[in-house]
Length: 137
Image (cartoon, rainbow, N blue to C red; front, side):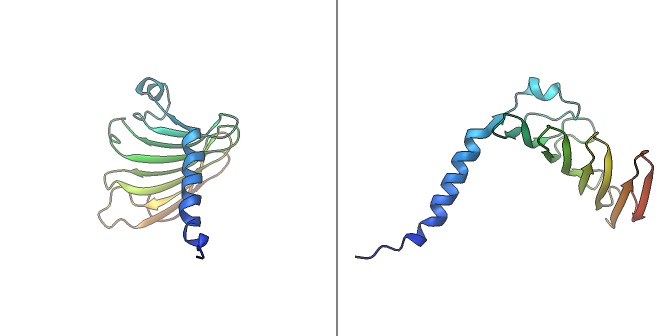
């Protein structure tokens, strides 16, 4: 009887990945979340082998943002470098790319307030000056 192991490879890989990810998960408590400048409710963070945070999954609790999700990606020095979030009255998808000092350098998404939800792209120079490429932000 011949067994086709390739059928079981995806299950094995998903199980292995889940085990590795599960061993790195850290679930934030509300107290930990309250100490964070971004004001999110309890969430989840994934750390690297060095225990430094690399990935955050959370829900904002600040007024005007309450209940909106975000995904944050941090570099090897725990600097938040990229956010994927929902924002504004439209709860629009927005991607924010940050430099090593934590300053927004590139922001793109759909209009936060207009019912037409037109796309926008904005860059920020080293002095923090906004340059709107297109759309409204």
